[in-house]
Length: 232
Image (cartoon, rainbow, N blue to C red):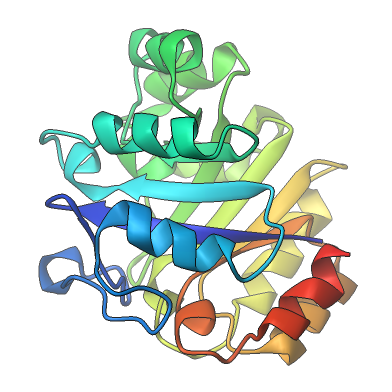
């Protein structure tokens, strides 16, 4: 099972994501970094283990504002062997094609950014991106048909339970189990709620391909030894 650290970008800084309430996010304070600058936080996270992938949520771009491609380009240059998964709210086939062709990063297609099923099908048609099935406190975000029909999903799917992000409540095992039962061999990644190594073992036993991590890395509930046990 792959462990994937997460960086949430807003206003040029890394912010601490909690429960998907983006209006309340503030620059992160973490023992892993002297500042909330993206390069500093990335260095602190990557010092914890031999991570192969970094997930970046460009929250300003998702909200329709100016994105952080310059930050992403700098990260790509500094860490050439690191895969970047980027959710920048890109939903059109043209925008996704630009991301694939010019980078930086592999696009993540968030269901919350998809206006309807036709847009979703067009975005997924190229097969270039990963799909994030986003769930807020109110339930599925984006086209209901996309959540219901596994035949529409690409080969890699992230299950993003926003209400559990930064909440310390544990992963949404029930939802993950239901999606894995319908995934038909697709790689399923868990996002939101991991508290400690026990949660990682439960997710591994469930059969997820990987897990997105932030708070448990920053507050030390997952140690270098815990990370090494899964990354070996």
